[in-house]
Image (cartoon, rainbow, N blue to C red; front, side, top):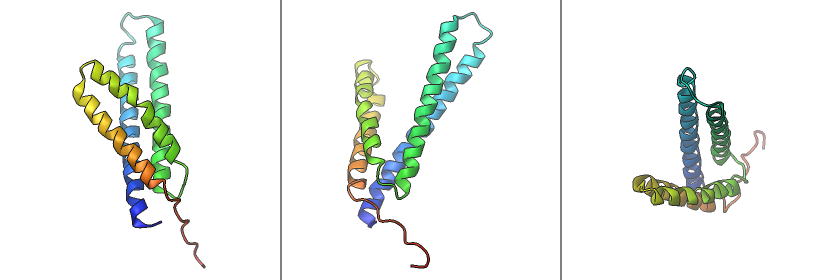
Length: 135
């Protein structure tokens, strides 16, 4: 793998790792909110929704973490899931803009463009396998 394809792969890995960490933090925050509300009066459907959403976000965080690890390795397939994930975030950015959260929208849009660009450039060349010892 040459240096030109290594840098975009690192950028894609960094973006995916940061997203994984933020999603995990968000899920833990949701679970902490749920635990602190256990004593208060609330509907069971709210509790079920909070726990379900937190688990779902943790699953996505694990997937993003796996993609980050694959970007750093010799895998040649994390390109498509990374692009699909970030294309799916475009409506989220639009929703942030529509709700007046302009700063979040701009940051998210920059991350989306950077991740897609890094995935396209970094995934354009299949990485060469590491040389085996003894060769």
